[in-house]
Length: 246
Image (tube, rainbow, N blue to C red; front, side, top):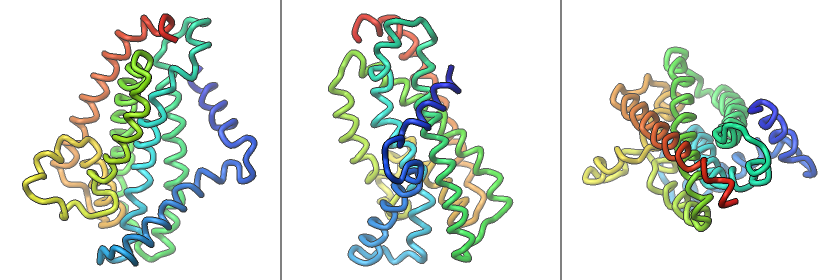
């Protein structure tokens, strides 16, 4: 059922658009151009190859932000199916997040091409940790999507609130700027930002071509596991009453 729904989502997402599936690549590239112009020309960051510095963190962020901000409605959008057919409700957030994850993987093809063409290159040893970080982010995002999609069924305003939170969240995460710019007094708070360690790890692997710091990996794993467990517990308990509120 998950495979069937993912196939339907990917096939129908850009069905009537002119560019079609190309929007998977166009959207992050357009964002990259805008941010690069702003932070390289207007608000100069002084970072070498800033477009690469940004790109390797922007793609994972788009996966996270889209899944959380839009995924909170994944149960509501399938309300008719939830009320008519019995199936494990977890299928819905899993389908949505996996579909977005596939988009991220396809976008990373562009990232690798840009890194190679630019001469930045890749560190094969560091690259071995990339699938691990991707999996950790996947489960982290899945946990959050399960949590918010369950709560949104009962509190519809949550979807609008999340859109604002995610927008602010991006500036609280070192996506457009280096983690070193965060004042030391806020470093402890950053450890509670689940995307902080994930973003730093992606950048260490792809931009700095380094093996991720052990503490970064441990923090990312802990946050991913905790959020997945919390999301599953809340979703499992709330799913019994979905049909009554849809």
